[in-house]
Image 1 (cartoon, helix red, strand yellow):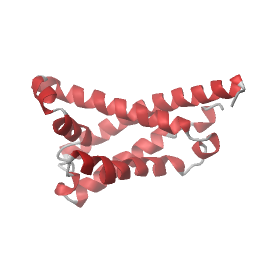
Image 2 (tube, one colour; image 1 turned 120 degrees about the horizontal axis):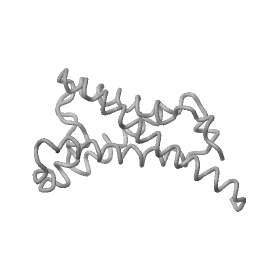
Image 3 (tube, helix red, strand yellow; image 1 turned 90 degrees about the horizontal axis):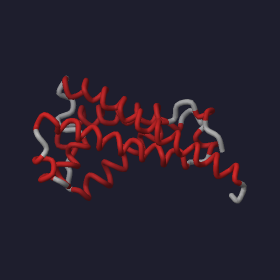
Image 4 (tube, one colour; image 1 turned 90 degrees about the vertical axis):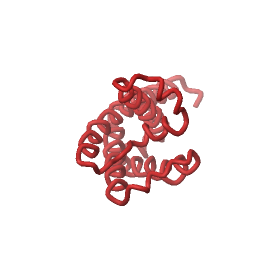
Length: 153
């Protein structure tokens, strides 16, 4: 990868992936408004992470601003996930199935890896919550993988 055009292409794919990841996380936030309003999700994963890893910080934030902190954290996660997506080879990013698979992988890594390590028991609310969280991660993957033809590399 000594060709400057390839480096530029990779940088472009990573930047676009990061931007799409942020937008995808915002789409998830909208979806979660619905799932929490219908009591399908009790506590979103970003809120659970904050409460488990930085409870004092979370409690110092005024109650009316806590949701904004949760959203900003979630959008940052989403952007980072988009950057990782941008690092995938172009031939993989261009596959129509990759978005939902990528979203599923993010959900599975959180459920099987991050959640247990942090001591967050997301399963305590049952299958409906898990399906709602899976659905919003499938949405995330679909959005983050949108328009792969725009990626250069």
